Amino acid sequence: SDGVLPKSMNELIENDIITHDMLSSPYGPAWDGEGDYAFRTDMSEQESKAANFTTSTILLIDRAMLLNEGMTAVGFFDGHVELLDSDELMHYLQMDSNQGAIDSLGIPDWMRP
Image 1: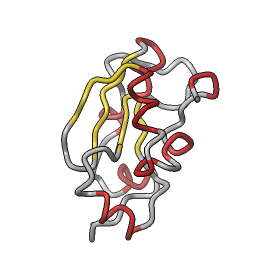
Image 2: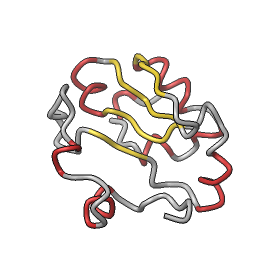
Image 3: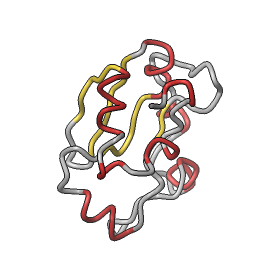
Image 4: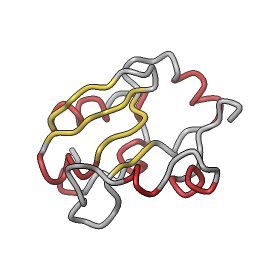
């Protein structure tokens, strides 16, 4: 609400915005046990409002798909979704608009640049 990103998936569940069932990827479970989906929790309110109009800024990923298939569905702040392989995802994650996203999205160490 009010254009502020939630602090966690639990906050979305507690506020009845999503259910636990919605957090299960068809490609899951993620083998590392860290959750099938991940979304950005590393941005301030000001950054998240500015990012709404940035087509390269990542909001969420399907972690289970990334870990189990090497590809992932990526949701961007402007509302579009792309299917990216791990190299393409890393390219986006190295952009200025995605600083902090690698940790926030739970990208495994072995996949990081």
